[in-house]
Length: 232
Image 1 (cartoon, one colour):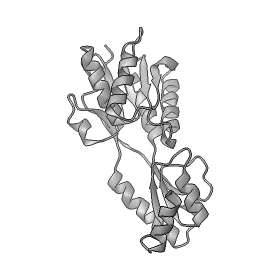
Image 2 (cartoon, helix red, strand yellow):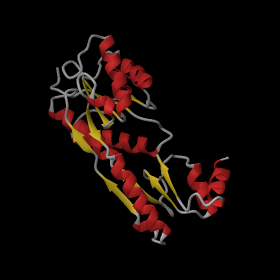
Image 3 (tube, one colour):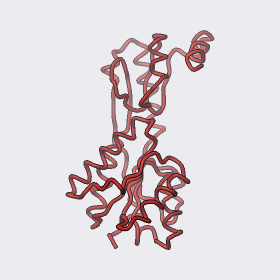
């Protein structure tokens, strides 16, 4: 079991504390480490802050800004493909998308929102659903880059040119997006920098700092490329 794995690492003195990636809605790792009274830091924000130190990128701000960017290009029908609902980031990014729609004076249409897409194939399926709607979106915001690249597939199958007939904007900054045709407009995350900061926060936690003082967020970096353009 997970808790036994933690115990073994501690018993063998292979670790004094843990960095836990991708905060989950139901996070058994957090419960296990609390039970063992072992220091940890989350990469991502928990739903309950009690006794948690964490570092996160403000994905909700990125989703908000993505909508505002598209609205500035004249798009009014904007779809959204969210990531995995088991992760806390999904609720945050959907909230960011919706706040961007409201700030832009745009209607939030439930049928233009898809959930639980994290792979290329899931992105293609979600993209196909959105693009086959009677009143299809002219732009799609994706919570993760990989699903956006799946939307590229769905668009190609319908003879839609990304950046001209359909705008796509995403989040992560993976290398595949930089090599897509056209290159994917996205919000890039500095995972190397995040890892360094998480390690420093864990060290401070091990030194006895209160978790309430070890909570930080930073912004993602907007990379405007060829996958977004004026509304057709």
